[in-house]
Length: 623
Image (cartoon, rainbow, N blue to C red; front, side, top):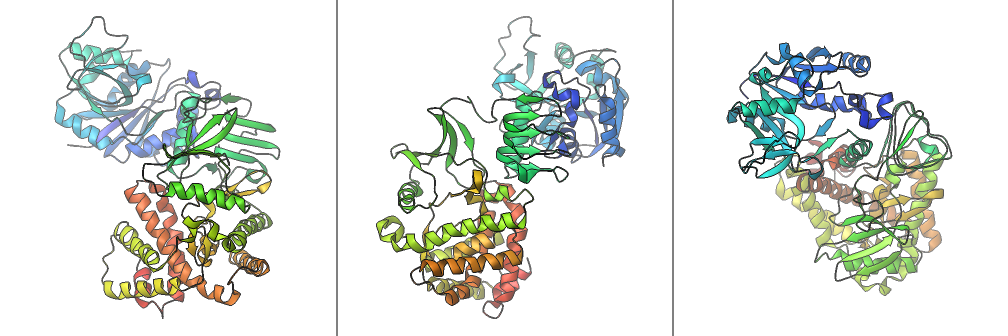
């Protein structure tokens, strides 16, 4: 980009397709996880070298103006009021005093959320000689812009008066474009539409080019389903299923499932059940069941469940926010929902998952029931356990007694797994022969080195030989501990919470024969949720007493306590390696938010083990 630019954000629209929601709030101020759409737009455009930002005002102009003036953007923004409203073209003409201040200017609609690369768009425009460059994508519902083989605009559906043989394809305008100031001469005074000005510019011999951004994230919050989709997408991109504003009340009183966003000033009363719902600021949902709804102070607007091609169809809704490559779909079978799992060809976990499910259910471990399986298609249909994990459940403020109760129920599952079920492991040959041995333990620490130290932090290993020696000793020590069946990833995101606080266990295909402390550490020292030390101590005692009462084979309380530190070191290095792999290799950046807690615990453990592992301690303390 040759110079700083000015930007214009149209924000005057009536939002008629969003009523009655926009009777309450103007579209630019619709909240997405506690922040208005306009805030996301302003944050994005101010990442560019922007001098000033123009925003037009008409519908609910006082609300928009007040929000801007209380925000950190107030010194960048100039207001351009309209009375009457001037349309998409007239808005730019009305702001001509600002937009004439540079060679080019950016226009970004106030109801668009996207990750489109604006720098790339500006650079494309600067190098093109176009009078306008539009960001376009292939979106069948909105494909109205006609392009030739080189991506130049030839017309727009509804504005083309005769066939044009040069038209190669259709595309959708994203609401984001770069204009030369010369374009302003094609806009008349008063009300006008931007498309008419495009046509005039092309007819006058100017070129309007495009940048195809197909594949970038884009959401237009112009309808209730689109708005709901944008909110739920924001939850998914953050690796969450629940957003509950700090100034809302009653999170712990409701039954919550699916994707939930509860905004500022809301009150959720006992007797309310929400599934895939957005509760707008200051709203109090009525008692009863609410599904696929946007709830306001005096209205409720339904929408088709986000992500579903057909809410009642067989193709189902893609679900799940974890790190797995397997795909899970919520489908309907005979009027009841179930979860369809799809595995890639050659996925070695597929047969294990099926065999482990049958084995665990035989001994009453609460894993989902398997309805059917198809080995040829690598699919299986399971009971639907809902969407509320222990991790999500803990997002609501809970009383200490509630937390203690649910963790004890989770430990009851471990006691059964480590005790009674381990006694019968020979009945499951795939599991009995799957040992967490030196090679696998050593793989975990190499994973930490490669995926976290090098992949995330870019840390050069100055004392590699000493570190490898300590990792060898750590793995050899852990490999000598007595073994039970372990889940191997027994953390809060893999424990589902159903009605009446019943717990169910998922993602157990990685189960192995390993030290039981590995599972206990995974739950009680979980980076996803920090437990109070007093609660952790009580829960540890509960597990030890339960294993002793269970007469678990080979369990010795004293020896178990001695294995904890080794397993904590091993587990947290594995977790950090996984966060590195999932964020850098798989692009799931939301896992990085769990790094600080995992690293805090690893530093605590390294300090406790400094005499045995000095090189590891020195390395970790520098991170």
